[in-house]
Length: 77
Image (cartoon, rainbow, N blue to C red; front, side, top):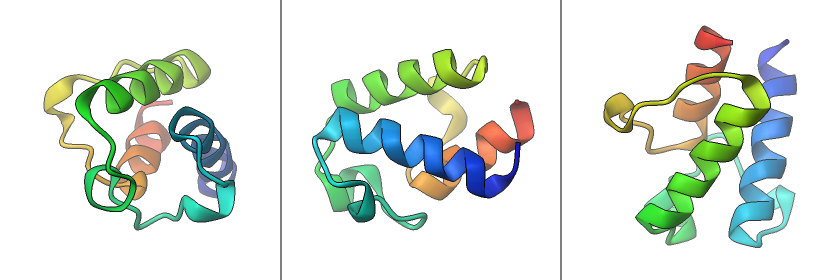
């Protein structure tokens, strides 16, 4: 799976979970600063990503941006 394919799927999941348009979710978007996502929002996004890509994301992975999440999935999937 390419970086672009991963980003597209991650983008869809984030947009769906946070009730945003997919175009609003950019690679450099920060979950807290750009989307005002709380810990529950992030937990739900991570659960969805884990199910979709069959990866396990620990809380201490330091995922703050969409790029962090895409790079983690790319490395682990």
